[in-house]
Length: 432
Image (cartoon, rainbow, N blue to C red; front, side, top):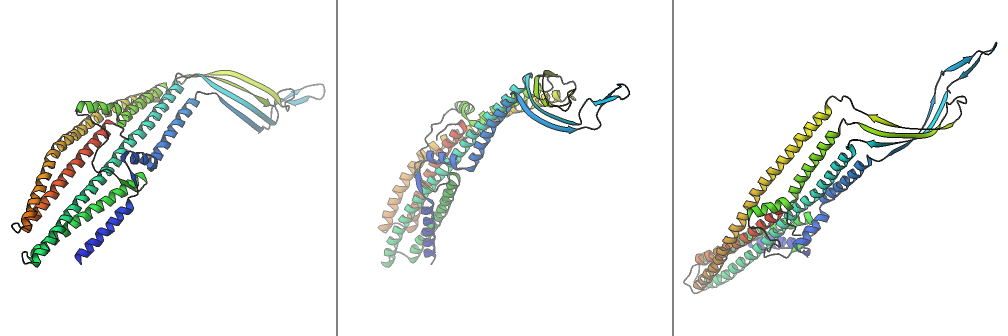
């Protein structure tokens, strides 16, 4: 009954895996697919459009302004002039009770001490930050998809190793059952092998469960049920072997460093804007339209126009301009310090990834040799067991050693690939 339930569980999980696997796709295809599918990129691209509109809006501050107005106002009482003319004085109004006006006004700033230019530069810095933020998130998403991709490859290969172990134990069990029937083995030997088979099947179930979860994560990031083809962990990008060289590449190419530089540019632009606060401005104004109230026919609608210049000089604003400048200077200094902090963090991460690459590369040499040795020992143990001079425990241990050697080798290959993937992310290499 226990064996039957395990087989059913394996079949169910295998069916789940086959359903999770849809179209075959390589790493580059999956990464680019995630850029168009993952909802966060739609938000980031919309933010880029917002930043572009902010640049357009900032430029519009330096354009002429034109507005049309129409008004009506009733006034009572109004001023009157009385002129004595003989016995009956004559009175007349100098302004109407009903006042109508239609005007078209225009204004243009002739001189603003660089206020508009500073605003435009600040908006352009925001646009560049939005663009680099998209690139930064793409770099992060590519690393996430790559990690899932190679995790799937690792789990598929681990399951294949489990299958080989189970097949070996199944064959060993058949040999033991024959020996048991012939009186050359004990029932205990058959049960021990079956127990080992059940244990390996449980490990396979755990691996398949992990594989299903990775397929679900891949669907979450790319929107498609896929079947990866990688099993050799050949990462497409090259990596620098020198720490200083890799750090220089990261500082030049990694989008996160670009974001820091963008923040510095934004802080500098904000400082320039702060320095324009409280500056005078010279503007030109003009207007034309129709209105009543002109003597002697004060109710008649008449054409009129006006033109002039206005000089505005702020006198006292409570020292807000100087305080804003000091605040902007402090924020600029803070942002520059954050670049040093980021470089220090990247130096540590790159060094650790390079150490992982060196360590796993060396370990793979020994691991491959251990596989050959363990397989040779397994053949000898199996031959000894079939010839009646070896024990079941000896054969089981030999099989376990092969499994451990293959899994260890697989783990080193996987860790080496992930370390190279991490170096690519840190140095800003676009491998997609």
